[in-house]
Each structure stands twice: as C-alpha cells, then as structure tokens.
Length: 357
Image 1 (tube, rainbow, N blue to C red):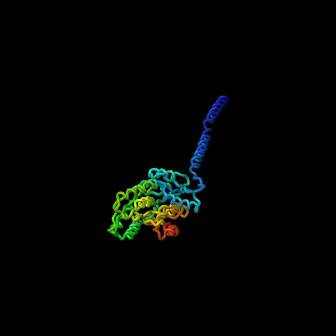
Image 2: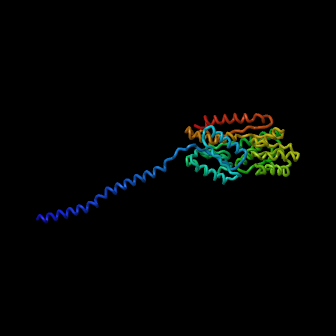
C-alpha cells in the first residue's frame, strides 16, 4: 500500500508539473497584448496633433498680371505689414482661368493658410475651388464678378452703377446727343456689365445717345492700339469712345490725335500714368478710379477679423460690398488721391462697425 500510494503521488506530481508550463503563459500573453495595444494607441494619437503655425498665411490670387491687380496686391501687402501675417500672392502670367484655378488650389493646400482673397471676372470657374476652401475652414473673399448667392464677401465697384454714372457724364458733355463706341476688354461678366449699364442708362434717360458698336480684347498693350485703329477706320461717326477696362483708352490718345480726331471724347477706367498724362495734357477725356488698394487690403483683412475677432459679415445684402468710385478730370486730377484715401478709411471703418458683427 505504501508503495502504491507513493506511485500515485509521483504520477500526480508529474501531471501537475506538466500542466504548469501550459497554465503560466496565459497571463504573460495577456500582458504582451496589453502592452502592444498601448503602443499602437500612442502611435495613432501622435500624428494627429496639429503643430502651432509660426506665422499665419493669407493669400491673394488673380488670373493675370495687370496694373490694377498690382495695386490690389499692394493693398494686401499693406494689411500683412500692419497685422503681422504672411501674404502669399499668386497670379497667372497671362490671362488664364485654368491657371488661376490651379494657383488657388495650391494656396488652399498650404499649411497655416487662414484666408484667401480671389479676384475674378468669371466667378463660375472658381466657385467649386472657393467652396472647397470654405469646407477646409479657410475664410474666403472675392472681388470682381459678384454673384448674389455666394456665402462669402464679394467686393468690387458696383460696375453696373458706375457704368451708369459714366453714361450720365458722357451725355452731359455731349448735350444728350451722340454716337458712342464701346471698347471692351476680355468679354467677361465685369466688362459686359459696364456695357449693359451704359446702354440701359442711355435707353432710359438719353434716347439721343446711341451705341454704334463694340470692340473686344482692347484691354492690353497690343489690343488698346489695335482697337483704336479699328475704331477710326470703321466708326468715323463716333463722338465718344467708352472704355470698360483700365488699358482700353490708352491707345486712343495717340491714335485719335494722329488721325486728327481730338474731338472724340474718350472715357477711361482707373488712373494709369497714360490716362493721367492725357488728362493733364488737356485731352478730351475723363476717367474714374476704383479702390484697388482698398479691395486688396479688405480681402485679407476681413478673413483676419473672422479669425481673430470671431465676427461674421452679417451687415451686407447678398454679401456684396461696394467699394465706390471717384470721377477724375482736369478739375481734380491733382487732388483725387486724397478723395480715394478718405473713401478707403471710411470704407474700412464701415466694415469694422457695420459689416463684421
């Protein structure tokens, strides 16, 4: 019996010894899994942390290099200097809506981008791109062509109303009777609105004023001369040459004089050196200035206010901000910039107190 009992005890001891290695790894495996889970969790969280931006970025993008656009960009640079952010200015070398879209998309993808101001005369081509910027949390502003259904601030001279103001001035100088030829830039919405405003005002207020034709692509160094030459040869009956773009009038100053037609009233847009020289030189001409500096400034200043002040543009109808015009002729050619500066300061105050709330 003793010997049998001893054998049983030995067998039992052997069984327990063999089971021990099978039982002891279980807590070790659980511990390993637990450690791996913690490590994985940490590696997932770490990349999602957003680093601090050393300097906020705001962008201005445009579809071409143009004197007006250059003044507009200077306005953005002025805001950047005053407020301490980095301005990214991107523009196509030659007029291209496709390239403009690519540049705007590039700006959207830049780190630390807080706001983007886009200048365009063809709003539909950039609509999806601007909506993508909004979806990413970037504040957007627009100048140029201003649809009524955008969710962002769009600013410009009210081109239709400004055209009517010019039409009124032309009719006054021609005693409400005369033939007007339109010199247009790229036939986009902005230039078309300037033509429409002119025609509509004449139809409603001065039926003795007639638009005898329209020339296009006149708003660059080559086109301005070509259009003026075509105007002289095809429309000798014209009494006024109405420009819808900054450069459209420039060629007329020399071409008309060479043809002995200084009697033709030439209207211009904005204040290029050539236009101011013509006014000072006594040409039969006048222009109106817009607010390029103010538009460039406000297009990045408004997003900055939204980021830093937590305000929104609730004080505008259809999100449209009219940036005003100043008529310039020989009576005020030496003092009009003072009027423009005063207009900008008033506009900036209006934005701060009435628009952004």
